[in-house]
Figure 1 (cartoon, rainbow, N blue to C red):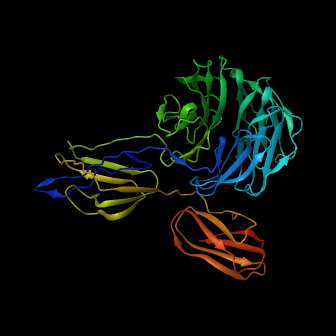
Figure 2 (figure 1 turned 180 degrees about the vertical axis):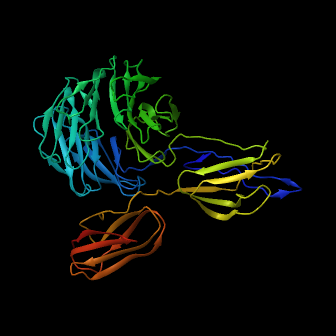
Figure 3 (figure 1 turned 90 degrees about the vertical axis):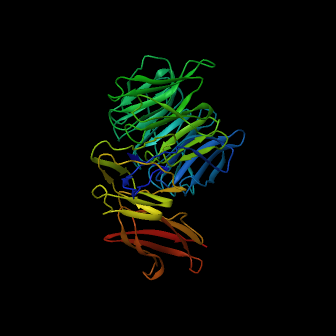
Length: 504
């Protein structure tokens, strides 16, 4: 059994009762749902991108009011407007780290526009793209190498972070999506069933015809072989949403899904087997077998969903028309129900905790990991229990497995980073408060301190042992003078410093 996302424990270990040993039952319901978040705008949101579980951006436009860029610093719970009233429509947004990002679009479809930020979106500056046609998608593999695609086969590339762009081409059909897995290998797709591939950074593009005249709205690869694309076949009112899959880098494609009456506009696979696609009328579908089969999910909206992104197979976001933003903590539509029954033979049952999860439970949990009918090596908890490792339960022939219901459970996902990181404070410059975030891949003795330009300690923000996870601390410099300050994170043997600027 795998415990993911939101969970309902419907089973507790029962003790020896009237000479009948009631061992263990677990009844798990993975309540999959998308929750609607307040974006602070009624714009039609076209694209969304999250750098980590906390920081994300979205872009779109309001009819007759121009383009808009919004940002979240708390995992998509709350959003604020960074830029609005632009004279072009932002259609695609991409960040390579917390500070550096680009947004691409068009002014009336006939003029390419790209903005760039190097301070987390505090300032967005226009880039001189040249006389290229309007853009629909932009993608960067690092701070220097990027590509954008658009109307009538427009493909442009940069090797200096967007300061200069060079035209590349492989078709006259409009291209709606571009995706690269490294600096050499990438794909572009769009109208007329057009799929192009490059293995030399876009110097040459080779057609990968799929043999049908469909509109491909989004394409995504997870490695050099496995990729997916979604779009629309036919025309209104007889159009259908389609999904295609490739296992050979795009040399061949097979259709794995078609749905009548809706258009699919976005696709994302955080893992090779697990993916999602979105489209018209609030449509969300998901797969757990690499796209061979797809199942619908309940989005909670009827608005057209334009883009979707996942940080892992649990945490994801989607954006839609009318300022709609969706978020899930548990994969959005997964549902699993498992009950253990009376054991027919000796053996064991396993409960695998796939990621660290904290349960707040209104009943005791007693887990017997010793021999049958013994209460040794138990884990007994009340209120809140932190599960981090696979748990094994032993049983003998004839032992009864009984399902009961606990009073209530609230589950909190805890993300375990894979490296120590001290992020740049936001905002920066600041006055007088700023937020400082950091990650711990393992329990550590943490000291987070602030120094002035003379090396004098002016604040100790954290000084304690903390478990692995992601943290955010507010720093109030209300009593300090304007100037340069340094934030230092020390966690065990790890040390990192970030420069901060206080301007009054």
